[in-house]
Figure (cartoon, one colour):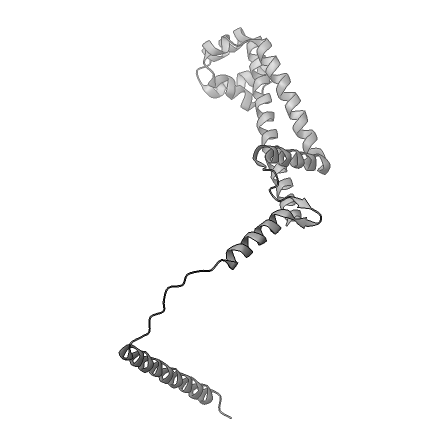
Length: 205
């Protein structure tokens, strides 16, 4: 059971880390485009305002600023007022943090031991948050709580229990019960006999 659970947790960590890696990688790609657009803000505004079609504006951005189609589309989707208010220092700081996180995620996926260490760390965090101390105490090779529980159960079993008086069935009820029992036995015998005959007829000697 533990081996199967460990295999599941490792697979989960790999899948989750892979998803996080792709998300961070995509964000780095967009932030790099925003840095380029903010550095060449006047040229970007000129392209966006002079090109009537979005496709032609995207092609011009890709050609002039060496951007990918995704990066060019991200710039076109941003309002010009917001684009002009972008600060290069903040974008570069964000890009640096994202690159560090991306390197950490890639390092985690590089080896199986790193994945196992992550699984252990997460399990320790869960144990620290939701774990409860052991209630059963060990002493002299005997479970003290179990001994206390058994002595308590012995005391309860030794105490006299008051049982309600048993009612004697009336003659009418007894005869009716006897008749019903006989009918049930007779019906069971008939069913058994019918089944035996059917089996014999289907399997002749």
